[in-house]
Image (cartoon, rainbow, N blue to C red; front, side, top):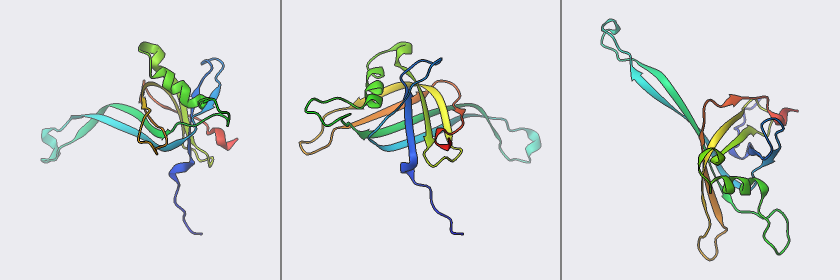
Length: 156
């Protein structure tokens, strides 16, 4: 059996446009890049018994999702109707406080166990470009607490 590589394009991102009690998962379409990062704060816990070898212990972790994409229409009408997932993130990126937080989940569409859910603050950027460019957007979702590994919705 030959091994095959996983493709980055197999990931999907959804925002909860409903409530925590009754979630409505809306796909963010038009993505061209998505990166899930985990960072760690460490403290030196070396001691005299380590034979001169240093040691670090993780004291805190943070996560973020960085996404990029192209603004897309929800339909083919002459009036621009934005993609609902993109628009939800854009609106959250225009406010401050808790209303700038969104409930998100991201997972592989191939049904693998890589599936997560969490709450994140939104930093939105986009608009403009050169005369021949497609309109870009970029979003940094900064995790609020621990991301939860969930059952992959694509596995159903």
